[in-house]
Image (tube, rainbow, N blue to C red; front, side, top):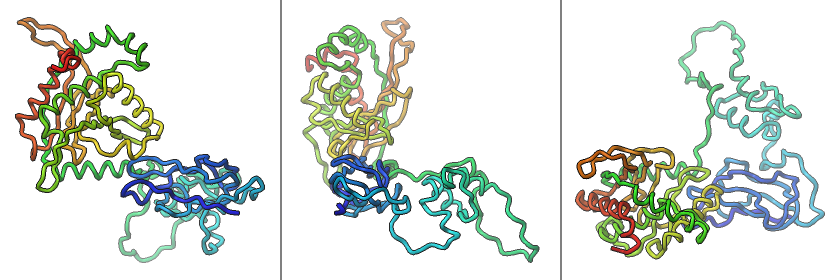
Length: 402
């Protein structure tokens, strides 16, 4: 008996996804709860497990196709005696018989990349000879057809101008569809720039005291808590102190109202396998340095392994982005709507500084605060960064809550 593999609920307000990768092909044996297909939404990646053991008899969508919640992705012949492997052509939805000339270009006879390049460049696949296993058409075969000189046509009267043909450098280019996550990021960036009055203010922080504190206690800290003492936990704590002093930066605009949030769910931007994501540290004001470091490390690992859930990404009252780990000296971060502020951290560089009438070399980090000027005035923004600077340059203040 065939068991349907359906698109599961994807989360609040999400109705469709893109088939990212099939882990099995038709004819493969599968185990119950084994991840069969990866679905990509604009927020997270979801593994869809097999509802029962058996054989994957067919799939209804190929990689790159859009699917909606509840649609049948494929069929599983349940039980140990499931049907044997079927021809790869069964992997595509049933369609009307194709002409013989088109058969050479069917999905069963070509790689997914070759199919994509052929579609984008309108290559007549009946003229392409496959060089892959069993005569399968590869991307190189399609590109070779593109670069092949056209057969001279009989002389005739000049024809009206036609739209441009294949791109002249198509053989040296690769066109890839934008992932749902990247598309959503692009949409939100445009949204932020078009709806908020963004302005950025800067300051510099002497990291010497925090670095000395880490050097002194990191070994004991790691032995006790099982995690390294990093800079991010100090900045999260300093940010919370600054948000308490300037609550409008922990607020959002809703129509003609301002919503002040008396809780501190801090988003920490991390680099995942598919791009930048911002998981949220819930109740960050109630966590100590060790708990913050553990939580941030766990979220970073989940991001790299595509294990973040919608719950990990939803909400957030303020965001911190650390471009310094990539070597950034200075930047103007963009707001994460509907938040009012985002803090940008950067790399630490030894710079000459004036202290007590003397020039000394100190480890300096530039920090940036981008804020929504509709709600936050320049005075509050500047003082917010000054408060962070004070906490980092005198880290005992964070420990003593002064």
